[in-house]
Length: 382
Image (cartoon, rainbow, N blue to C red; front, top):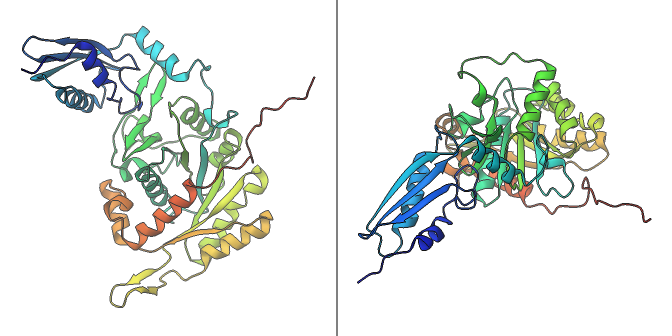
């Protein structure tokens, strides 16, 4: 006869269940209210949700049920959901901050190991947001802990591209939980508008404040990479980013067309004023693999050489080597997958465009970190 599990054994099993937003065990977060094991093998688990309308309540219920059902002697699992009190949410918020003061930007603190990339372009229509969303998804699929700030305040599109259009973030005692999407932690202006069709009519100070909140009021946890999808050009958001994240490295997206390349080069040159590093250039819509001759034959619909021109021009202006990180070919599937919320690198990982994007993602996320830009926390000897 199989013996019944103890409440302690059930609690041990629940330690393997992570909150889908915070990515920590529910036992560690104080979310397990009670565990009761009946004589007939029925296990009743009461779980605290952070808020009443938690969007991932079904995920938590499923994960708790699966973990407990795997124990010997369990005949059924009853998951009962409750809601944290204001005091419990405050304690959780303090726990997540690790005792640090509120309104602190974790990415500029001494010892931060998160590499920050600002994805920029000179003009709209070059596929910057699509590139950013696919880079994030490719990194996450490669085991990288990645966050994405949709800082394109007026033209936010990351939620749709990552399949969470219309999602609202959970807020715990004024701390915002990023929305999980294909392994990516995402925050976007769209998530805070009353409805998706409401236009954003903000000027400089409000744009600065919005970006600041995305960095300081969001619980990002431990990230390897943070991507920021910037608006086109060199306006208020780019300037605010330089002030808030001086350690952010710029990645410029352009197309092969020389007119677009000239504008992109000017956008990258903002690094001269902000003293930021330009990490490299991505050329999107590089060519169309010939549908009749095979992928080795390229149809250069928008000309050629724009990406390399931007890289060479920025290298001259900045006095350092700015590489061409990759050339992403045209693929209608890239647009179609963005429309349905499934990143192309996940939907068709072996397509030429996906292969190029995954190569760039790996190059950006697996660089060795040097000492440049990091505080060594040194002080003169007394």
